[in-house]
Image 1 (cartoon, rainbow, N blue to C red):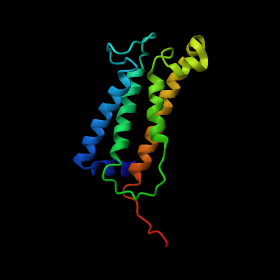
Image 2 (tube, one colour; image 1 turned 60 degrees about the vertical axis):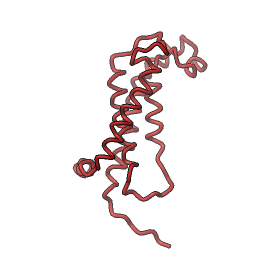
Image 3 (cartoon, rainbow, N blue to C red; image 1 turned 90 degrees about the vertical axis):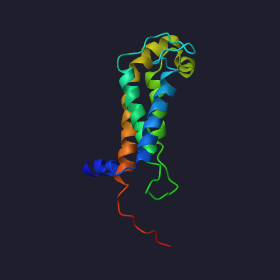
Image 4 (tube, rainbow, N blue to C red; image 1 turned 90 degrees about the horizontal axis):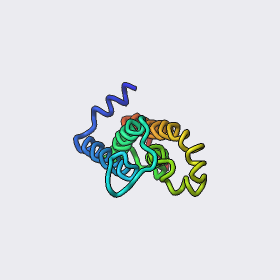
Length: 153
C-alpha cells in the first residue's frame, strides 16, 4: 500500500489535472441523465436512494484517477488492456439510475420486475462498480515503478 501512495505522490500536475477533469466530467455525465443533478432534460419516476450520491462520487473519483494512469504512463504498452475499469464505470450508471426509467431493464424485466428484482440489486451494482474500479486503479498504480523485464527476441 505504501508503494501505491508513493507512486501517486510522484504524479505530475498534468496527471492530477486529468484526474480532476475526468472525475468531474463522469459525475456530470452520469448525474444529469440519472437526475442526481435536477434538470429539465430528464425525469425520474423513483427518487434517488441515499447512497446514490456517494456511489457516484466514489465512482467518478476512481474513474478520474484510473484515466490519469494512462497519461504519460511509464508502463509499457503490451496491447493487452483490462476492461474492468470500463465495465466498472458503465456499471455505475445502472447502479444509480432510476430502476423503472432504464429502457433495458424495463424490456428485460418489466416495471414490476424492475422494482422487485433490479432495485434491490442496485447497491450491489454500486459496490461492484467501485470494487472493479479500485482493483483496476491499484493494479495500474502499483505497477508504475515495477522493474521492467526486457522482452526476449
